[in-house]
Structures are given as C-alpha cells and as structure tokens.
Length: 105
Image 1 (cartoon, rainbow, N blue to C red):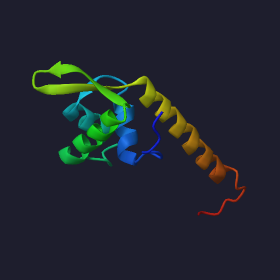
Image 2: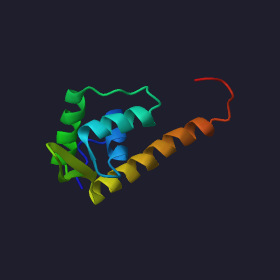
Image 3: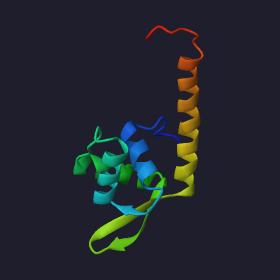
C-alpha cells in the first residue's frame, strides 16, 4: 500500500468518504457540501486535482461514464487508507478526551 499522501488532507477525506458510492465529479462536490454542512465547497480544479492524485495512488477508480461524466468509486485500498486514517484521528481525539482537564486548548 502506498502511504505517500498520508495523513490525508481534509479534501481527500471528504472525497474518499463521498466515493463510498459511485459518483461523478459534480455529485462529489454536492455530497461534500452536504456532508460538511456547507462549510466545505470545493472548486472544480481542486476536486479534479485531488481525484487525479487519488486515482494515481489506486485509492479510487473510474467505474464508467454517465454521458460525458466519469464516475468514480473508492477501491479496497482506498477503504483501507480511510480505516487507517479513522484510527489515527480517533487516537488524536482520545488525547483530548483523556487529558482530564476541562480547560479549553
């Protein structure tokens, strides 16, 4: 497994999570906006640059076309990367919870 992009950027997290179901690029942008409660709105160039990177690393793949639009889906390797990132982030969050302090950071 290639780890050169780990830890994942926020953009890559959102894209991989959105692509647990097959979607084309514009639908990925809509899904990310929905999942982030409107706080993350990706420009097309950012999205397609990240998709190209994720595809190059084998974490997503093209699974067909809908008209002129390519449809992408996360691969098994991409799911494994997400799982590793989930465990890494859960550990970091546990450090906040385990501090025993009610003071803000």
